[in-house]
Amino acid sequence: MRTYLVTQADRSRGRGTVATVRAALAGGVDVVQMREKHATARERYELGRELRALTREAGVAFVVNDRVDVAAAVDADGVHLGDDDLPIAVAREQLCPDAVVGRSVSTVEGAVAAERAGADYLGVGAVFATDTKDVSDDESNVGTDRVTAIADAVEIPIVGIGGITAANAAEVVGAGADGVAVVSAITDADDPEAAARDLRRAVDGVRTGRVER
Image (cartoon, rainbow, N blue to C red; front, side):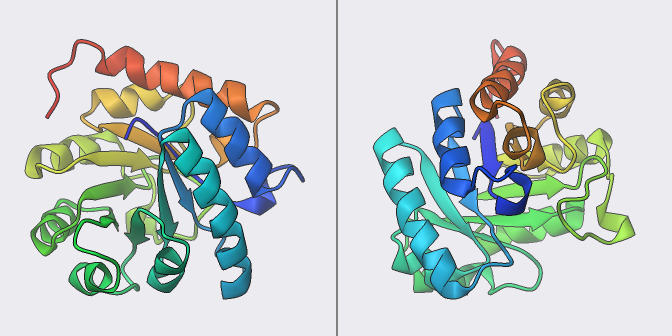
């Protein structure tokens, strides 16, 4: 999990999510999460089928935000959960034993609890200020020190999310994240493919030669 794209159609400059994902895959993202919180279940299902086909062809992991039912219906690799979603164990039961289950966390305590509950990876943030997701004050702009603390506390992979760009991605990975997850840095870019490539280059520049956790 080096470069992880979270989709959001209303940030795609009218290109739409499918075109954005296609460009991002060409640029080197290795995880795609379908979020699209304002879409209906039917719309997520239809979009999910298209994204599943694209990611499968590219050999890239595909996860669905929140909706375990949609993840199962489109044969996604897994699901990404937040505080208000199903417990990790229940989500895995609804999918399959080897499904990928991610969890959003913002504290060391939350990270440790999620790992103990069986999460496969963690999305840590918001690392920097962001306007792509409504988060409480104590979950916003948690900083890279928090990334380091969580990386030191768990054994599973973590990706930093929230306000991350190619310009600050190296700082997040240098703090201990295995990769970064973004919305606007790719979807709102003039050239999503080039933006994904720049982001991947920034992450790989730090990871190269680093002893992996």
